[in-house]
Image 1 (cartoon, rainbow, N blue to C red):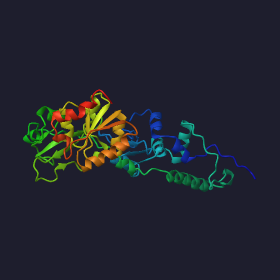
Image 2: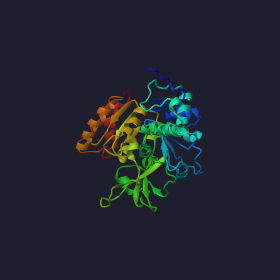
Image 3: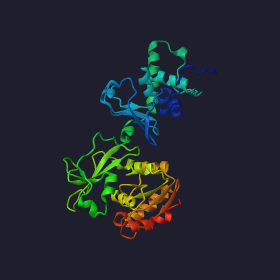
Image 4: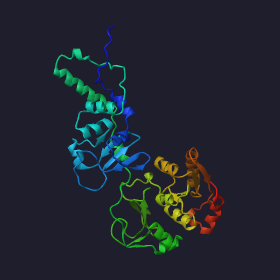
Length: 359
């Protein structure tokens, strides 16, 4: 049987995409895109199709999915409504070349060796009798590339909460509601919390600023000041609290490697007020995968101070079983039926002081 050698320009699309990451490609072009979290990069779009002069970062890379997307309408329009893609798509746009040429460049740049196995539909060059067969082959190359392409909608849905371009004014940190919750004025001011007298969706609520892990303001939570108003808590449409830990930036700034984890905003305020500034809130009773990553990346030890009710006890079991595989975990027993924000500073100090000086 005649052995037909592989041509020098043979492309193994699957191997290229398995070997070359978006981070490798960005480094090749000398591009620095800021890391937002464990799996996401965000920055200004580097593509030549991006003509918008706006200052908001529109380019994102999901490192785990090895995919990218640009949210700019002008950039998407220039690329025939394609919002993003994989490493092959990125290089094709940057170089203004075909998918096949993009793969060849990546093979050369990163020394990706082509597989010795020929696909079932491989046609030796001596059998390509005319140019039309070459065009058919190139079409199959693009189809092969598409077989393992990433659904960029997954990148879009994972996009972190965008920083706000405004900050609320006329916030009263001395409002009686805060005093009734046991929050001192200096504590409220430390968190930027207070009653909002202005207009808009947060009007006549106690607003609580939420920042991401690098200190950017990304949302406000609004708490009703009476028991009749619904909902009690209001968050902006589209805000994904599962991607954030409340007060994480301030906790990281303390330089401590041991973190106290609570459920609510006011729990965090009361714990800080009691003398423990390295505290974050889940903003609920569940720990998302992204929140877990944020804890593990920034701290060595976790103290769980969740509510003393049935939901809180159940949450402790679930959260502790996940975190204990990567960090040291301690559990504080909050009195039955109580929440940390319902305890005095002295009571919180008594619960937490045994963890001082240790892990």
